[in-house]
Image (cartoon, one colour):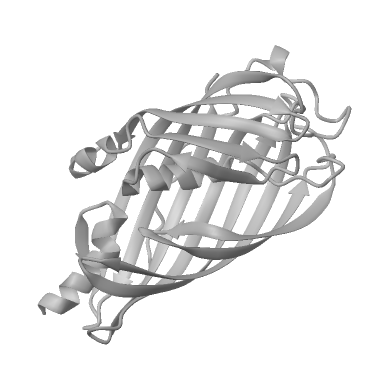
Length: 293
C-alpha cells in the first residue's frame, strides 16, 4: 500500500495540487478561462493584411502578460482506483525585449502569481515562483530558447513552459493571411512535473483575413511525443508521453503576440522500475496568455 501511494505521489504530488479520489475513468475538462478580446490599443496595432507578420529586427520594449492555466490530472492506480488532481492559477509577467538582425533577446520576470479561488493549498507552492527570472533568445523564425533560469521550483518551471508557447514559429517569408506552414522541434520540455526530451510536429494556418482589431489569427496544431528518466524521493523513474495542443494566436503586424488561447492534453505513463509499478495518467490543460499592456 505504501509503495502504491508513493508512486501516485511521484506523479500527482508533483503536479502541484491536492488530490480527490475519483471512480470514473474519464478526465473532466478543466473550466475554461474566459477569453476576452486582445486588450491592446488599436492605434498601436497596424492591420496585418498589408504585409506579412514577422518578428522585429530592431528596437525593443517592455510588455506585461497574464498567463492563466487550469489543469486536471487523472491517474489510474495499480489497484484500478482513480485519483484526480485539479489546479488553476494566473501568473503576471513583465517581458523586456531587444531585437537585432540575428534575433531577439528577452528577459521575463514573474511579478505575481495567484491561485484560483478554492485552491488555497497551492499558495505556498506558487509563492516559490514569485520573482522567478529567465533570459531567452528568439531567432528570426520564432524559435525561443531559454538560456538562464533563476528558480528551480516546479511552479516556475510550469510558467517557463508557457513562456515558450508565447513564441510562434513563422515561415521565412513571414505569416501572411490565408497561409499555412509546418515545422518540427526537438529538445528539453516538461510533462507534468517531469523534465524530459520532447519531439513535436506543428501545423499552422492563418485566417484568410485579419480580425476586426487588425491582428492576424493563426491556429496552431502541435503533436508531441516525449520520454525521459528522472528520480524523486531517491527512486529512479521513467516517463513516456504523447499529446497534442490546439492554440489560437493573435499576432500584431509588428510580431507582438496579443493573445494565445487553447487547450492541450497529454497521456503519460510514469514507471518506477525498482518496485515494478506504473501509473498511467492524462493531464488536460486550458491556457490563456494575454498581453495586458
